[in-house]
Image (cartoon, rainbow, N blue to C red):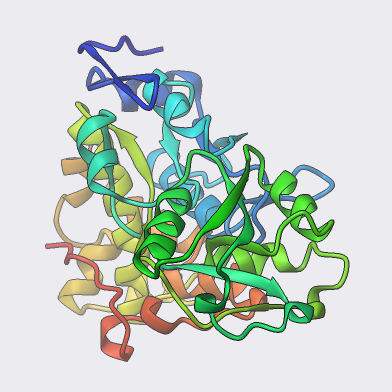
Length: 335
């Protein structure tokens, strides 16, 4: 376990370390796996089946880092965390990466001793209501009871929205996501608000999913991505470039199915750098030069992960499409 080397700061009554010693890669190698902080169950992003197998877009990010570090995407263990627990867990060293549909904000970037290593899903906050409520717009929700999670940006965003529109509301907040779903399903709330991806994922858990609708309004920007502690640039770079490798692989048309042929036959300079045939980019991260090849062959590119995990929720790529396909997903080049 690494020692926290800087002073502690308090945010919302919780103490966080402002930095960590630069030893995460050594610690990870010593224990033989990466400890990844995930949600307590959000289909499409991080969710465990009855056998305890974790899948999802956020899960694949941690598996990608494991593939980069160990050459084995299965060298990762998962710690389910509530929204309230997550920042304490990463700041204390309980987990090595927080990959848990977490929004990148200025406060979190500057006051919690944490670094966001990129964005793996661009989202926005929405609202779900029973169709029986008879509303078609969030501006019709004056006086509504609204369910959400504690310790999230959703509380602040919903407050801003109602204040800006001169409306009142009653917030009903719970720590665990399943508690929010249960309360909304039981009729304790008129509205369930969270990221639109979360609404799509949780809607399937309702008793009668088709009796509920997501309103058209998107009331916030929610760039979601992996989080590491400040003070360890090497580990930050490994996580950031693992994500970039998956996005770059999609841009280049390299998949888990064709990466072997690509590695041995393609001489395109950019591709050669990505799969480790040219340059020493892995060594510069403290890894082997086939680090990105291991990610692509074992986990896949970003599109493969999205299509396996998020598409079944009915969520189109939208802004999460590549920049070349009309979206805003764009990875820095490996060169």
